[in-house]
Each structure stands twice: as C-alpha cells, then as structure tokens.
Figure (cartoon, rainbow, N blue to C red):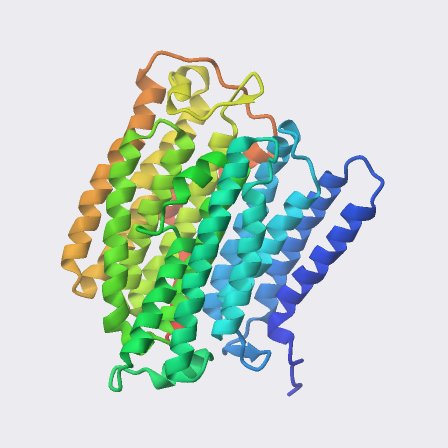
Length: 483
C-alpha cells in the first residue's frame, strides 16, 4: 500500500492558502477595470475546488498531520463543507451590494477566503496551539470586514466594538488554555483526553481553565452573557458582512466548541455540561425576549441568532453522541434558513436605497407576493413551526435533551420557542395585514434569485428528505466519539 504524503490531510487548507496568495497578486497587479469581478469569481472557484479536496482527502479512518496538530475525520469534513457553502454563498450575495455602496474593492472576497481558511483550521485543530492560530486567523479577517465600509460611521463603530471585545475574549481563551497547560502539562488533545477521565477527574485549576476557555468560545458564538457585541455589530456592519457573520463563523465556532468539549474534556462532561446548560438557558431567554422590542430587522436577526445558538447548545449540553448529532443537524438547517433570510434582507431596497426597518415590509404581499411568501417560509422555519425545516432541527435537539434526562431544559426551550414565534409572526403580520409602504425594488441578480428559490424550497420541503442531512451528521458525530 502506498504511503500517503505527510501533509495529505491538510491539502484543502494548503490549496486555499496558495489560492489566496495568488488572488492577492492578481488583485494587486491587475490593470483590468473589473478586478473585483475576476477576484470574486476566482474566490468562488477556489471554494468549490477546496470542497472537492475536502471530500477527496477523507478516508475511512481519522487522519493526523503536522505532528498531530491537525486532524481530519468525518466531523471535520461535515463542518468544513458547511463553512465552504456559507462562504461561497456570502461572496455570491455580496456582489451587487458592495458595488452599489462604494465598497467594490478586490480585498473583500479575499478577506472572506482568509476567514474561511481560519475556520477550516479551527475545525481540524487537535491541539490548543493550532486551535488558537485558526481562531485568530478567522477573527482578524472578520474585524476588518466589519469596518470595511470606511465612509460609514456605523460600520467603523461596529468594527471597533468587535475588535475590542474580540481581543477580550481571546485573552480569556488564552488564560484558560495556559491554566489547562499548567495543570495538565500538555496542549495536545489526545494527551488531555487521556489525562482527564470520569474516573480520575481533574484538578480544580483545570476546571477553572476550562470555564475560561468556554467563555472565550462563547463570545465567538455570541452566547449570553457574551453576546453584547452582536446586535450593534449586526446592525452597523454592511448587510452582506452581517449575513456572513450570522452563518459561517457561528458554524465554525460551534464546531470548535464541540471538538474541545467532547475531545480533550470528554471525561469531564459532568463539569462542563452545567456551564453549557446555563449558557443555553440565558441565550434562549435573551434571544426570545429582547428581540420583541426590535424595529430594525438586522438587530432582530442578531437576537434571533443568539436564541438559535441557545437551542443548539441544548444538544451539546446532553453530552452524548445523539446530542452532538442533533447539533450538527441544527447547524445545517440554520445555515440554509439564515442565508435565505439575509438574501431577502439584501433585497430590501427602495429606489436603489437599502431599508432595514420591519415597517418597510408593510404590504409586501400586495407589492411583491413571491418575496413575501419566501420571507414567510423563513420566519415560520425559524419559529420552529411544522412542517418547515426549523421544526425538525428543534425536534432533534429536544429529543437528545430528553434522552439525556434534561427535562427542565427541554421545557424552557419549548417555552422560549413559543415566545420567539411572536416576533417572527409579527414580520408576517406586517407583510400581509399592514397598509402597503413604498414598493421594494425587484431582485436585480439572477444569482440572488437562484439563492432565494433554492433556500426557500429546501426550507419548506426538507422534512421529506431529512436523511440527506441526518445520515452525514450521524457519521460525523460517530467519528467524534471514536466510532
């Protein structure tokens, strides 16, 4: 049998890194007028090729590279494909907006590619050091993206807030990692997993370090009480940047949180499960009640994302293979319905001018019935109303929690889901029962029409082909638990 090259598992990341450097050279030295268009198209091609390589390098068994700092398993493949899909759609959705708003710079898709590379490294991290390198590569790109619209004070403010609070979360994460290393003597995930088992337990210093690490990662997924940046950044950042923030970084950070807790600290599930339960309850509560008072649809989606993270954490709190499987299914469905919703928000224009208030959707069913129907599908799905895909995602996490004996958490989740349905249904009420406001512009791009159609159809009909999502999720969760 031919021995594989030592860097074979990291081929997708290596290819994407080389592609990014090539794109930077093309952008810097190109004399063409439409440099952004060429770089965007090549970035999209790079994502597709990288996804192909991700599928190519996976084998039947877990593979390690770079002195065991890097790991590739079914879990990594599943999450990387979600991240690449989200990034591909984010670049596609951004093109029209960044041209209209004077942001047509070739660096924009390259920043998305840099962030995507960092996310892929996070998902395959098998050591605290490689974890942090991937996390910072992602974060540094996102800080710049949040403030990319330099002439807009709201965008600049969003970037500054995100940077300051992100630095704080990185400090907390590093402090926790240093404590774990100090008491365990290793940063390698496999060594930590062997050191911490349910029988031997762990030193109190390790528990404190773990809590600091969870706090740092909770910032990245905007779980309460580390959510304070989310509404302001979502509202202030350019809308396509907000769409990207709402999906890809959330998926990557959740993947990293799952790998850290289930892998090196899997034997301490009794300790960290309590922390995840608290984060889940607070996130569901704040995400449900704080959104009721919002009039800006981007701030509404910010609190919606906080609430959805709370629901996803229910599955993780179970600490079981079934719980992780439920989280993976939840994230896949969350990606589809959020991309669809933000595609609708990106098309909220009147006379070429972006509008962001929920009241601007008044009477949309009369002016643009197709758009109103799509928004209704996405709102029903996020509210968890059957037969939409969002209902199935909540059903899976609630079932995992019940199987793990977390009855109270499941009840709280069901109650907050009912509360959150209020503000989702309010959007539908505005569209179908309020007097018409100014007519929204028609969808200008064929690519945007395709994204709206596909995400809408998938969200409405996924209940009929759930194995397409559940089967890969089962394999991914099994690989994480050594199956």
